[in-house]
Length: 124
Image (tube, rainbow, N blue to C red):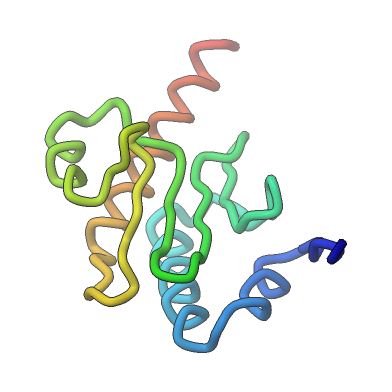
């Protein structure tokens, strides 16, 4: 059985994907870093992620799409805009054969950082 790669950084993860996909991941990384500057990069569940007090967004490369997790729950107008990309659980799937909506991903990063910040402050 083939051993799975263990990623210790986003750069490790990005190095494991095709060049075209890597550029999309790099742009998503940049969008999140500039949108939520207090967040730090991490690897969680072997996926690139950002955290601020706790992990609030994951993203991953697949053969035909980029996935972004977890679902946005607290912004109904944003959820409507995300509907074409959402699966039955609300996780997002952006096809690689279509333009990636980076501005929408920026809004997702804001919504998720707020969603998880609210969870952290409500449990303190």
